[in-house]
Length: 494
Figure 1 (tube, rainbow, N blue to C red):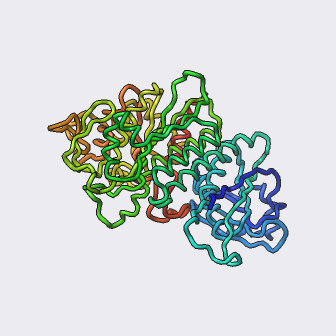
Figure 2: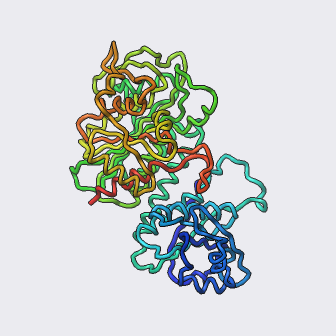
Figure 3: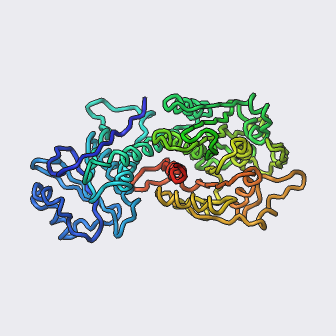
């Protein structure tokens, strides 16, 4: 089943004149009803002003109130709260909740209104509507047609003026489609979203946007001497894939940005096998790769004037008679030797070779994303992404990009004192440094292979997916880190 996109458009004028199954209105808390909604209030016999005056609707974050309309105009009006003194990304959240409610109601068309909706706010509204309405139905047996709920297919966003809105809408649609690519890949079970499927997705993106794509398998990686990556892949019969997707929107010879993603399509832990409880969630261990492919989709749609290269290292980590063992020593592409202490610290071994390979492009910056450590979830929970790197100015750029995109990050230390934990007795480095400061020691391991360029690491273990319903989106993939990637690249584009 082909994934459905949400068709988004803009319209100026009076929302009371629109005949639509649903009109969602985003309002801040403790504010009077905007004058521009006066006509709609009259159509609803004063229901809007009455709800606000009587405190039936206070505009708190995630608050909703549904009003049915028996007169002309929209059939239903859904009030959605923005919260007190809302930040610009609050619009994404409110629109996402509106899109999710619309999808649950089974309406195929809706409209969205908020005061002074233009520029970044319009872009965020478009992203939010897509984020909330997205649903993965491919593997469920559908009920008879007459009993089947209809997905949301179209949303009209009201703007003060259509003039100048096209660019913001297009940017919002680009990011929304990128998030849809990433979330679809992440939600798919590991027997369907294989390394080969990630490679096929990269080829599809390349074909539609005229990008260059290169895919290396086990044979090619052996010739490249990617011993660290291949050590992880040696336990699985599936052919590992190293995917390189090149977008050339900048000048010839201009140094690119490299976006790097960990693509473990399933992580059992290998010989150091994980507990059975909740192991099914390890299909999300390729969320970094999904984020790279989603970001490349968005960047290509935006036609940004910059060169960007997406690099994805993808395999599965399985226990078998050929799997790597604790105590083994392997050699990475840059010549450094790695002692394998724990086979469940496999993502950093894949990234080691990919980050080393990235140096060949002489990048202006490299940003990687990986569901790398449980320690990051312990430290930051499910709200903030862990951010570490070797260049403070680039780290600051990435933190600012995450803030703009509603994907907050928090910098963790990478002090030299922590390096003692990953010293090996028999090799140049070992792949795990014990229980303490696990996110930092994992990043310090990566830093050994991110040499010769500015590099930032995003540990998205706690933010790429959610095991509980978040009100605005259900359990499953969140779309992180697509917006962080895109905002960082946009910030450097000419």
